Length: 464
Image (cartoon, rainbow, N blue to C red; front, side):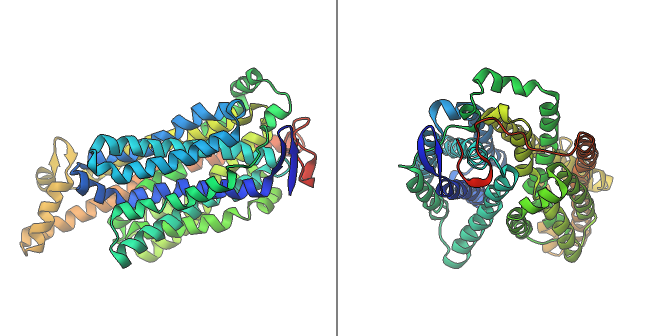
């Protein structure tokens, strides 16, 4: 279907599909990098801490790009920025593949470039979807963001399949990300893009920046921090946590919950209409709290699976619905507010990772006997290396080491459980915050999306 804007005719379905494929590219970059991290450690002979820096470059490139690029969507043009993201993806992946010839700094630089491309995609596709579908923002943003978990599943299955079935090296697996990058690049290269909804409605850039000072926006930013930590914090740890608590490969749970989220996000529209977007978020927060608390008590595979299902359903609508509410209630904030929300969520989730790790370590040490503590705690920190030495002795049949290894495993289970239990506090707070907002909207006659003059003509499909 065509739509008209001041930049001529644009094809909104084609641009929307290209946006979905661009998001698949960013998600595949995340899941494949997570899978090849150990192999990068061997190739570059780098410590776990240095591997952590590789991850950090990928994650921090995201908010840096969103904050810089987001407010410029209308100045530079959404089409030019998305083409730039495509080039960044392809170049970043190629440089990563050849980085062993140039050393560790090249790996860091190329990973940052991919992170910046990921952030640029996020900065463009959110205001683009909100502009093209002014009558159905929350639903369309949920459908768009269904392709984040969709891309995680695709990336996870591609890298695992190539590694297990064909013993393919990490370069070839990482190179697979180029395929969706080329597809979305080809789809958008000659397409016209609309001006942003905010610009088309004549809202000045100064007015757009001023919107961030509104109390309702600041409250949404606080909620975004907590929803992002609830959704993405445990995701960073679920692999090692579930390995310690249940003894199952945690990545399988990630693929499972991502698949669940993909399917559920496609049905966000009807749910948001029944419960209102704020009501839907309150329900999500309640389910997330129950799921996380239950997961922290799950020491068998069946219980962990059931708890992960409740948590997976709970976290499904957080990110896209938060963006939907921001755009529906504060459209004058336009592309800038959407960028700020995305960056706020990503920064909060990035900080949550190490904090959860500290809780994990602290409670592991608390559950060790004083004798074992002397063996595996170095400089007041739990040492995985020392724990591995005990494990090796136990495997050689040393009876003392067998008992010690059992005790260490139990302490790790308790530490892992506590890391998740602390996060469960956040969705409890969110139930209250979203519940109060729900009651506020009811008191003023119900939740309604605010439409800017000249931003579109309703559901007919043409938008100015």
